[in-house]
Length: 162
Image (cartoon, rainbow, N blue to C red):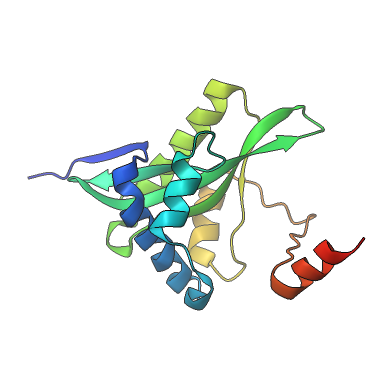
């Protein structure tokens, strides 16, 4: 019997699977100790009265095997929103089945439906399989921009400046 795969918006019942996938991704990205996401965190983020985070899932035969967690951005130059894909993850057993591309295609449709002009994400420089996949979609690496991040003590130190 053939598997049935669907891509859909995440529902509250999907949160435990989404959290598990986020932890699997952190393990894959060699940063498992940095992932502290809980079902409470993600439920509050995705299903608050005015959520700032959104998610789609890839489901095969009723089991969530992939996810895309994203949020809106805004371009002051373009004057419109875009989507920043925070996490794209498909379990290893399902890779190569088209689910990653289907998740990205759904986010592209979300952009087109809503007049958003960008779909962007980051990829680790050592993750060649992902880089090859994104290149196959004609995604353009933004090598002229660096991502900077403040966390922990440096974030608190900056916040304390008056």
